[in-house]
Image (cartoon, rainbow, N blue to C red; front, side):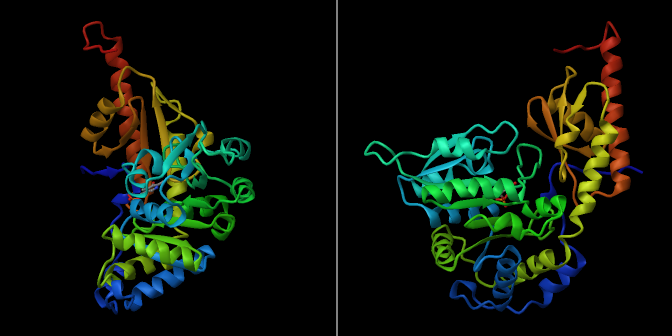
Length: 358
Ligand SMILES: *Cc1c(COP(=O)(O)O)cnc(C)c1O
């Protein structure tokens, strides 16, 4: 009877049966010596899928982005990115600490930078200025509710950087969600940029791992960075085997997660004390703004008591993420449970003796 609906993140996905089998039988070698055949297979498949010369298997998306920034920059360089980007907000400042780069964050209220604001942020050559050396984009945009950058938008932004003479890195942790939602080949989203990182371990359900892809010489620099960071793994083929299943078996089904997110958003739309911008539900995330006196952590706790696990994005905003571990039936259950939480709150506000917090 009691169930748990895990909506905190798509990182909670568990490996599939097919992954377990592939992991058990994977052919392996020492990947620091570049001799693991399954890692090679994964790296070739990943590079091909995103239309790049080469790719590198890394333990996490965070390390992948860091290897990419290290592969593109030198200490003292400046990196343009948006102020809500994962690299700026959620990677412990690694590129500043390890790479000695300076972040130059730009405001992008809807999660999409514009070519003109990027152009305006590029430094003129001047003895006082840190040289602008890299633009980082994010698709889908995590802290902006999983919204997508289109091929045209990506192209427009990359063109500004390339005209100014520096490369573009795409934090594409969920770039396959974007491709599926937009109905385009993922190459249309990666073609305009110089490198991309994407996660195997989120909606694609692998237990561990991310990929960095780009030109061959860039990947060699990223490989050195990975080694420096302690990310050189030995018989990593057992993990790469699961990653191959992600790429071969798990991409198309992301559409189900998107349909579930839409259903969830529609089911919660109009619930008392909650506001959802339906226009911005493009992929597998639903952001809901709390307008009741409940704050996000109280809401989180009350939903948790109903078996629905949600996360907060800000003190007044909750994040709901759909993935393979959440069925259409779980979505109906979650809608009813969340509505119950909000309804109880709304009626307790009407009771004069109720505990009443602002
Ligand atoms: C999850 C995520 C990452 C980092 O991936 P980890 O594997 O958790 O380190 C990077 N960028 C974005 C946009 C993400 O959502």
